[in-house]
Length: 258
Image 1: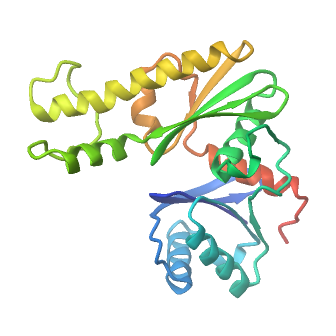
Image 2: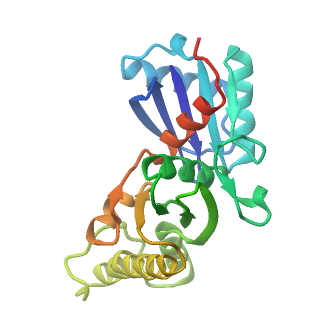
Image 3: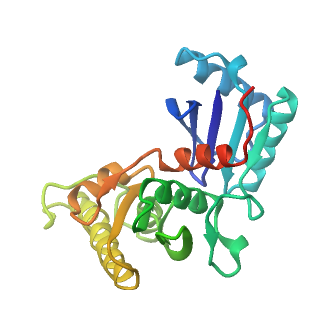
C-alpha cells in the first residue's frame, strides 16, 4: 500500500493507494508543531478506521510546502523503515519545468501538472487549485510546466477582511442566495463566491489566450467542489488530483511496493 501525502499550509491530505486504486483519503490540519509520535497515532487510527492495516504500508510519497512538517514525515519513515519519496527540484517527474528558477515551484504544483498531463496528454491544461492560495498552472501537451498565477485564497481574503475592519463579521465561504446581497453576511459571501468566480474566469480566459488550443481546465483543492460548479470554464473537478500525481511520480521512480 502506498501512502500519498500532500502537506499544504492549511491542510494535509493523505491518500492510500493499492496499485492505481485510491482506497481512501483523509484531511488533517497542518499543525507545524506536530510530533512524530502524534503523526504515528493519527496514521494508525485513520487507516484502521477505514479498515486498512498500517502494517501494509510499503511506501510514502510526499509533496510539501511546509518544511517543518516535511521533516516529521521523513522521521516517521525512518522509524518505520518505510521507503520514502519527497518530491523536490531533483525528482524525475517526467515534467519539464520552464519556471525561473525551477526550484521555486511548489512541489504540489508540479505534482498537479504531472497528474493533469497524464489525464490530458493531447492538449494543453490549466489547473486551478483552490487552496490557502489559489494557484493557476499552465501545462503543455508536450509535458512542460510553463508557470502560472498565484493569488490569495478565498479564506485568506476573508480572514484579512475580518481582521482589518471593525464591524464586518467573519463568515463561512458558501454560495449566497443571489449576487446582490440583502444582508451584510450575504454581501460578503457574494464578494467571496462570485468575486472569486469572476477572477478565476478572467484569469483562465487570459491564460488560454497565451496557450495553444484546445485547452482543458481542471479544478482541485479544498474549495473546488464549491466554487467550480457555477463556471462553464471548468471542464472537470478532481479533488484527488495531487494525490494521483504523487502516485504517478512514485511509479516513475520504479520503486516496488514490497
